[in-house]
Length: 368
Image 1: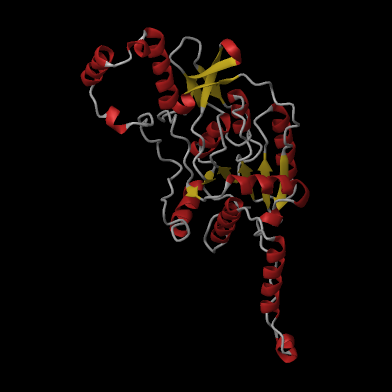
Image 2 (image 1 turned 135 degrees about the vertical axis):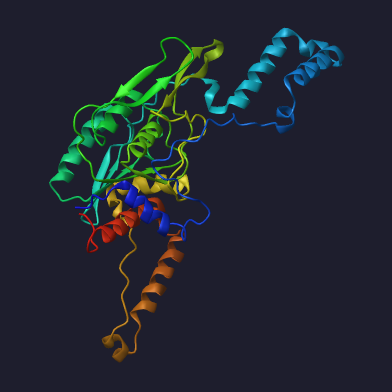
C-alpha cells in the first residue's frame, strides 16, 4: 500500500516540481503559517501618511472644499462606508438581498482513477455530501485504493464550519483541537475538536483554487497542518471567516466578517487565502466545463491523454507511420471542433505526484 510519511513525500516533490513550476517554491506542510499580513491597500499614497497627517488633510478639506454641502455628516458617513467596503474587500460587503438559489445543487462525485487512486469531489460541505463521502471512503477501502484526491475546487459555497470539522475527522486522528473561530465580539468564539478514528489515513492530495471559499479553505488547511495532505492548485479565496448580516432598507444587506478560522499554533490567515504546496494554474471556466462533462464521461477522460499508436515493423513494411497519422487525425478533429481538448492540469499533477511517490516507495529498502 502507498502510505509513506508526508514529510518524505514533500521531499520528493521539492526535488521534482521545480522544473515544471519553476516560478513558485512549494511550502513544506509542517511550516507555521506566516504572520498576519496588512490589509490590501488600493491607495499607496494614502497609506504613506501618518495619522496626524490624515487628520490634517481631513480638516483642510472640510474647511476649504468649494462645495461644503458635500461634506455634511451624512456624506462623510457615506464616504467612510464606501472606503471601508473598498479597503476591507471580502471582510465587508453591501449587496441586494437575493433569494436562495432554487437550482438543483451539483451532486457529490467520486470515481477510481487508474485502478488505484480514489477521486472525491464534494459540491459543498453539507450533510448529504458527508454521507456520500463516508460511503465512498468505505468503498475505496475494499478496492485497494492506494491514494485519494480530494477536490475542493467545486466547493464555492462558504459552507458550515462545523461541517468542515466533520469532513476533517474522516482523515485526521481523534484527539485535540483542529481549529477554532475567533472574533472580537462576545459569543463568536468556538473551538472544533476531532474524535474517533479516521475512515482514511493514507496519502491525500487536496485540490484548491480561487473558488475554494470559506469552510473548504479551513478544511484544506487542517489536512495540511495535520501532515495529512499536499495542496495542489491555486491560492484560495481568502474568506475563511464567519459572516454576520445586517438587513438594510431597499432590500440591501451588509455582510461583515465577525470571526476568523485559526488553526492551533498558527497565525490567522485572513484575508490572505491558503497557498498551494504545488502551484498549478487552470482557467476557472475550463474547470467548470470539465466538472459538468465529468458527470457523464468521468474524470479520467480529462486527465489522461488517449493512447498513441507507435511505429512498428509492420508499419515500416507497409510504408506507413501510425504516429504521424494519429497526430494528423487529432489535428483535423480539433480543427473541426474549433476547440482544444479539455484537460484538467491540476488533477493530472495530483496523479503524477501519487505515481512518483508510489515508484519511490517501491524502491528496495523503502518502508511500505
